[in-house]
Image (cartoon, rainbow, N blue to C red; front, side, top):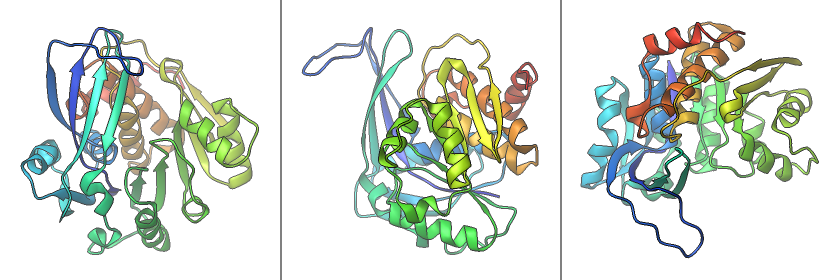
Length: 302
């Protein structure tokens, strides 16, 4: 099973011609509301790719909670680890421009009260994969990772949003996934001189013993595992919205890894899923199915 200690957020997405600068107001024609949150997105991405998924986390006792959980519930995700907290359900405010680029402000809300204990009922096994992100309290991520690692489960961290990773959590990670910005921030926090995401990924693998994947947008992705480099191009798609592309990658990668397809096969499915998500609007509504992922993955040369 894939277990996600997840941020759960309701996204408010505004379409605008261009994104505003500091102190500037831009006007768009409308906005839409979608379920989101990096953890929740990754959970649904893995489920749509065919994996059995369980989520732990927190929502508020408000009307936004059910909307935030709606597509996870429809997707068959086990929500038995989702607790009710005394803060509002998390919310994100997203502007998407005519090129599909975005700006995002996230208010954490109930995600600040996400507890490792929400997954205490899960019977960990070495076949499990734990997915973590940086939108829930790090101390709770550490506690969940310790439980998973003690049972031999693999721990995957998507270091998003960008920021330093504490040494206790770093010691529990088997696979680290970063984008270009997250890689640079991580390098600074480690007092490394590298700024190139591939060089950073190689050093994480070589010096920290953590397999590392850098997603590179339209350039595809590069992964280092056990001193071996894998690089995959991104298939060409019509980009309409890059929201949740990274989450689609992470969820599909984890699902493929859980199926036993290996590191390279999982990268192939991840880049296919991320590319497909870019061709559709919204966060969770953009996440592709397993059949769609396999059809596009077959066109990507390893």
